[in-house]
Length: 171
Figure: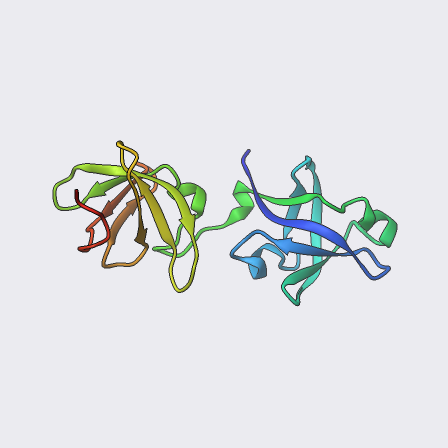
């Protein structure tokens, strides 16, 4: 079974076993919802059940049913919390997990020709930008917007695009 990182446990919070985490997911409300099952990357057989959680400054605080005091919580410091693929959930149309976009072939929708491969993703603002690397090593960023990204076929690992003028330097 595949697992996905959702948070890093930073420290304890209070005396009752609550932990402060640095979030590594775009969906903290879902991942840390009451009753959600998480595991430790170092021991995926150990399941932790979220009892309650809440945002705290730029972090989240999580209380697990299985962790009832500060001593137990202290042993979790530095651990990575993961969610199993089966608990990951479905995304709305047009929303993708980064792992599903990485290494996708980029195809020119008009010509059907392969342009390159997606090698990086950044989230600088309103939309993600994807770094395309051509076979000759040339790289450029494309925005993940409807005017550019026309279709994503996760199963085939292909992204069909219509490049706007100026996105790709033509030599």
